[in-house]
Length: 239
Ligand code: APR
Image (cartoon, rainbow, N blue to C red; front, side):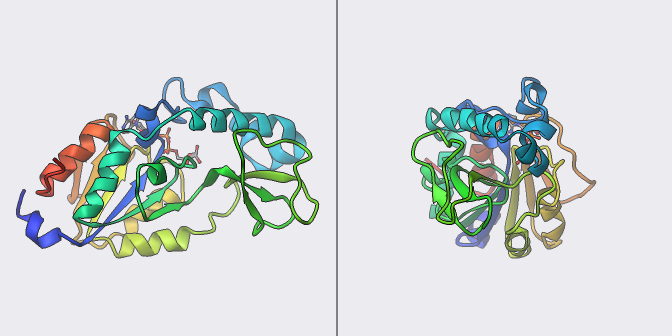
């Protein structure tokens, strides 16, 4: 497998990551046993209708998740992706709303589904603010006087930077899917934009909902060990 080394260094390694990437940091995934959607009804906490119906309930859901995020730290998987920047032009397109990729030192991180540590205006989505601490409250207003809401892409809302994500997938020299069940679109569709000649790796300890594709190398491991294995297959020594 080391034949990739001299051919790939400096090349663009594009990562599509999901909740499993942060599982080893103690953050819950969504659809697994004990996942967030097992204990919360998605239609009560993660849709624009839910926000209109009961903003307090939605606010509490994201405040609790933000509190957990502030207590969490990047795991070896996040750190290894940041270290891969020594060898590759690493571009991370994440479905995660946590900031653990950035905290681990990754320099190119695109959030498709929003950012938990930010709030935005209910009246003008371009008005985005950093949240100080974990709590966003009813009565916290934007510069235009409208209620601030979590800066999250809810089900049924458009994914503003999906075209940027598609462009990254189209420019990949190596494409890596880490810790996502590939059930949520349009994020899961990015794999279809990867050019045919590009090697594709999928890192997940469990079965993932993937179409038949001879290019795909499945690394059936958790993110931390799986990325170390990926580096080995790419002929890179992360030390
Ligand atoms: N390392 C790698 N993968 C893991 C680990 C781990 N330690 N632990 C679990 N996984 C895998 C699971 O096997 C599963 O395939 O992570 C995946 C998590 O899948 P989901 O819970 O469906 O999360 P995700 O795919 O990120 O969800 C997509 O759905 O709920 C919405 O907006 C939310 O961004 C989210 C989107």
